[in-house]
Length: 296
Ligand code: Q0Z
Image 1 (tube, rainbow, N blue to C red):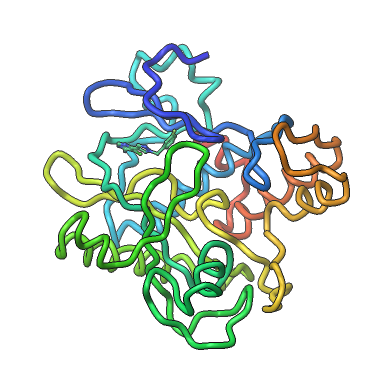
Image 2 (tube, rainbow, N blue to C red; image 1 turned 90 degrees about the horizontal axis):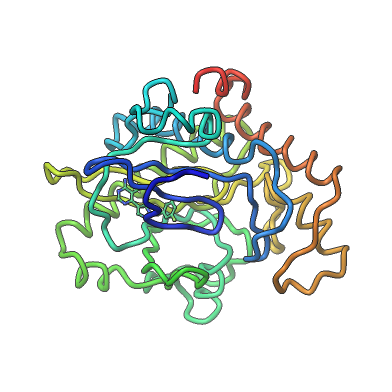
């Protein structure tokens, strides 16, 4: 257990206060499927997501500054050294930001809440889209589809760009949209080179104490984005998830009714799931996952 003030707890990660200016983001090995956190952990999942985030922050550094101070436990402050073994690989020491109260989402493909909006309105977040699009269709252009953060356990609510302007002002709204589309553009280009489609991604931005807009949280991980194997892409049906498909297939066949608590996963599903997370890390970064654990 980490004896620091817990600032926030997400479904699968925790955020601790370290000092006035710093936070510690800790990713667990828990996994959520169909909106339920499963009782079985996937070993190393938290470290894979953390390693990916750190790598993406580097890939994006010329587009937007980020909140990462260090993910090397040897560089953590003395107050964290008692927890170094527990934190290694799956934590990031971050600068504390004043978060912008907007979930910044970019979508290059239609699925999820974007598909539901489209079916009901012919567009997403007030942006019209062509008729005839299907689940998994490539969008004619990447769209910024902001949402407002819901209470824990609830879904974020898609909102119009005008609603973002009303909430944060025209200048910041334009900057959120520009940065979100730039991050998606860089991320999807890199992923596509490695045979992975980046369907969509969610960013969180905040201001540092100098008033600079900074990328926070985790970025371009399988928990904040949808990654699809490019070779299985076929619009008109739900796309297989790069990381979670084995788990979903097993859950679908298990007869589980998708209410909490979910079932324990069998060892082979856990192991296959772990392999998919590690494969995502290695395909995207071109480095071994072991090298990440050694670096951290
Ligand atoms: C992130 C979240 C949770 C993990 C607040 N650098 C920052 N400064 C201020 N606030 C945040 C950050 Cl990253 C911040 N979240 C989302 C919740 C676990 C991340 F429970 N909330």
